[in-house]
Length: 131
Image 1: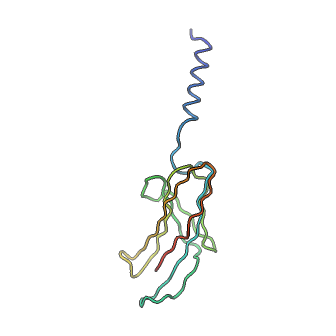
Image 2: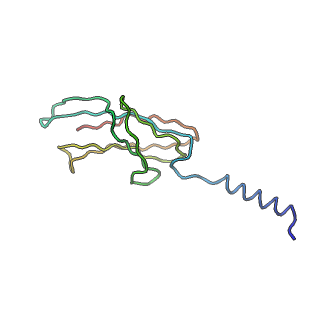
Image 3: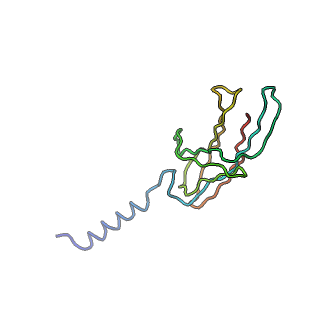
């Protein structure tokens, strides 16, 4: 028959092992990453036609070393976006846009961010796309 002390020690060690686990980057935390998308639109002659913050565009995020899309949000009317409820870790935030003069007819802009604090709110510099 095991003693009460054995179960106490076992429970204590189990609790320590659970609470000491390092979580992977991704959802489930209290941190956030925000920013804005700015677009320069050029015509076929290379002349600037328009520019500004763009609404309704998808912004993507990848967790850790992943190169695939893990989540996405759309930009607000002022071009802003925000990924909330993130764990500590490395993230890549990126935007893709169609571009007639670019290879494969698209252009991509990325920024890598590292969240180091549990409740950190990071604002990245503008994602700028030149079409």
